[in-house]
Image (cartoon, rainbow, N blue to C red; front, side, top):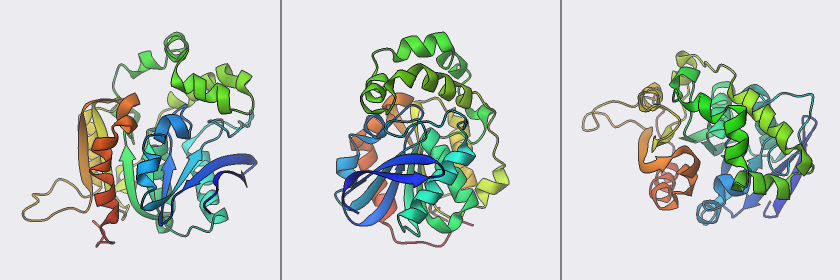
Length: 268
């Protein structure tokens, strides 16, 4: 499977994915508006030294053309990823999801626990109320269009999308998606057996107390000297949402060690 860029016919999409390296599979799922390059470009060469990295571009992201009549939703994106794993004959994998991708990874773990070994969840909210209250400003149409003009996200889209002229439509679609209420039951998350490394920036779009609450749902919060949880928590210093996956030194100091530990007794 070492052949870099590929397309798979998935649920009516020509879903773009890349394969780098060899070893145990590690699936990478990007954030809102991100293609593989803006989300994971600096990390892939490092992660692929010991892993087979499979990086995906969601519906309307990067090389994957949008289906105009199909909305963006966590359920549909999760369906696409699950079907891709089937097409690639990957029965079980570690998943590193960033932002939107972390939400998709979380939903896959809820719906198909059999395909998930371990989770790395970076900047994820399982409830809309967990997001920073000022996020509505960021996703206003005026601010979003101006802030992204000339950005790496716009440049990536214009250089990789099958229809670069659809950039304004993609912005509107992502904005509508991000404004939908998200509320996954705590009991569904606490029922996930796969250990999770939960990561956020100290100036992230996710409020810290929500990140800690998610960590506790994955079995965290015990006194380590008495009972060490299999899940882990990391708050990266001096890190905002859009720079989190650029912090390669910090991430590579924790992600390989977390993933490389052999399968352990589930936290539930």
